[in-house]
Amino acid sequence: MSAFALAAQATDRLPWKKPGEVLEYHACGCADSCWVAEVRNARSRALKGRLRCDCEQLHATLGPRGAEQVYAPSCLAINDSADKSQSIRETLERLLQR
Image (cartoon, helix red, strand yellow):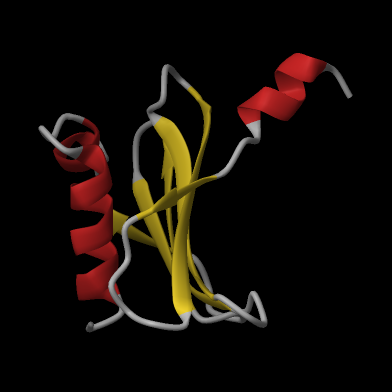
């Protein structure tokens, strides 16, 4: 695997207020319009919820076995926001009813 491919998969931690959980983000292309943000149990790494932008639509998954569904027809509200990480966090809070 090339160094470029490894860099593209780098994961960042975003602010998340719920103890015992972490919010992780990584970009996958389209000039940062393709990305995945996941809330996981900090210890077990079990998936709590995922948002995924495929450069166009926003998809969401609840739980480790949840089916991915279209959450919004566009990612622009998040991608064009003044604070993208805050928009992602707020959207996941609504999704997970936090």
